[in-house]
Image (cartoon, rainbow over all chains, first blue to last red; front, side, top):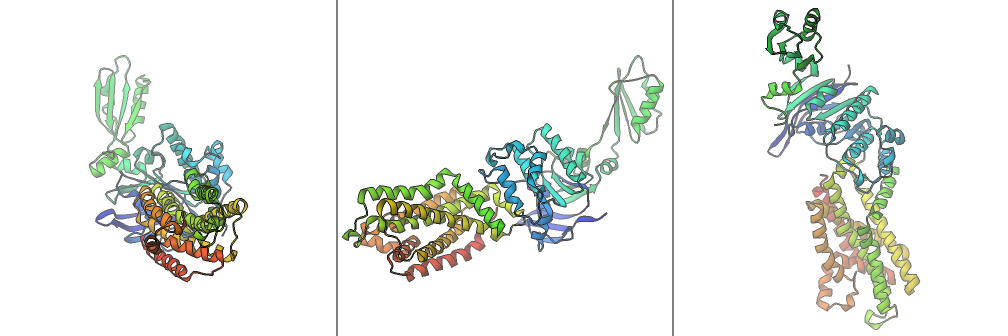
Length: 303
Length: 245
């Protein structure tokens, strides 16, 4: 696959503060790549260096084959940017913003369909200052897509959104990828990265702590999984102990928890079916990216 | 060019949607004209060197608009754009830094010319204003003084940490200058020492430049040198002090 973004040993300091110690990563065409980590880890500094908005102290960056420092304007024609902290003039109307930003690009898509797609059609004549947080966010995404970009950068896209709006935004991000665009998603929500990312880099203290697919990161953790269910009429959980991968079986009355690794759930289900057990609450609990972060850094991400 | 004209047009619309800044730049000078015009009229008087009150004060009011835009309007607007992250958003587009800032200059010059047109029209129809001897030269002088004051505006915007600081410092610079320079009041009513002191105020030179061109005395070279020097120095320093965020 073509590398769309290549970053080698990026470093950026602000006076005595080292925001980015040493970050290397590569992003391939057509994937959603998440940069995750706690607030202050250096994610935004890294991604703003990649977009050419900041000058790194050292390191090599190539985006779409361009150097963001020396070919920044050419690059910005081909990428879409949604910044973590940005605003438009309060009295600027939604349609005026799109109409104005369209003139900044050599090539732009018609903005009316973008208004429709992002649920802003009825806010067309509303002033920016009167929009809700979610509406502002959607306007910024529409602006980021105005030049039909090859790479879209989304920095803390869903911060401040309610859970429903966040889910809707996730669907929209997948839709952007499905149009063939590469998406770089910066987030401090592990859940969001796990949900959306094809691959991700976990950033901590200005370094890449790990980079891979979410599934591989979780599997490498070898934290195993747990299967829980409520048994019916006198089931003896001992039959689950010899199953492959099972390490422990807990039984508290009718509540049973099976610990283990590998394809645990399917073994348990096969055995239960043979024993005529059909629990309605069978569920598997797996390690997630939060656990990966905890294992990598010894800290919880939201600490 | 299309981008710059669109940006300027949008900025003009935004400015006109701000009732307070519109009032001070466009309406306030008109009110002063009507207030002092209704008291003193425009009959020639020896007190004003044989000229009418309106004929003397109109170039001053135009200078006042230039001073308001450069010392308060531009720095406060730019500091607000910076504080709120609007400049950040523009910088994330292919727009060059110079286009972003040029749009501000062109917008403010357009407002200055609009303010001038309002004042001159009102003064002409209500008080029979004597029109300038060299209208084209007056327009050039307005643009020249405007750019010089806007350069100071960029300098202030870079030096002021926040929009409210820009507002406070702008007011502190602007008001003494307004009353002493001859922009808000004819200098004839000031004591000689204050008139002498007013020579250090840049706005005085805008008033002198415009008045001399208005009455046909030609280019006031002292004013041209002072304002040109201010333009060069302020531009040079502000390229080093201007901050985008």
